[in-house]
Image (cartoon, rainbow, N blue to C red; front, side, top):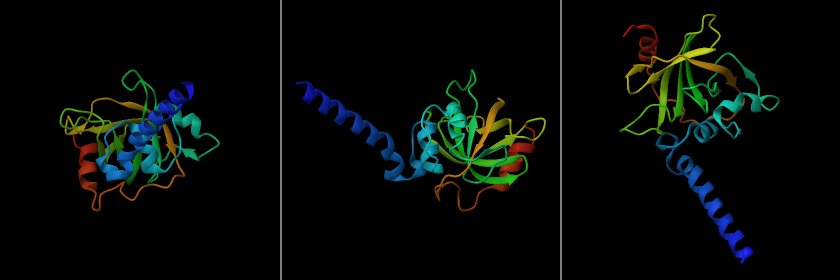
Length: 183
């Protein structure tokens, strides 16, 4: 009986793992609905597991890290009251010194639910020293930058990013307007 139970548990866990990662492989990166961590892992090729806020420390000694965005790098948001598990996203385009676009999942609500992937979302560096330690993120519900400022640990480099990270013709002007035009 124990052997049968063990096989059942293993089969169930394997099924859960397959269904957990299948959406990324089955339909395409932007059709994903779920948490930010598996999305960022699939989109960036950076093989780190666990809550988003732990990625920065886990990357130490395994991946290069820094405080300047590069296309394909993963940005790690710190754990806060608003982000109790942190957040990770993948840089899809660097627009200019304080503006970039990222592709991520589970940020804005779409059709009333969270978890959807979003491509080429504006991220604005609002840190006093232009070091990407504090950012504002475009928020679909506001149709512009959200009001919150989020602390960032930095960028993790060295994965093999998906070719679906950015649109064929990203809206650089829109990203700059989002960042610099008052609402």
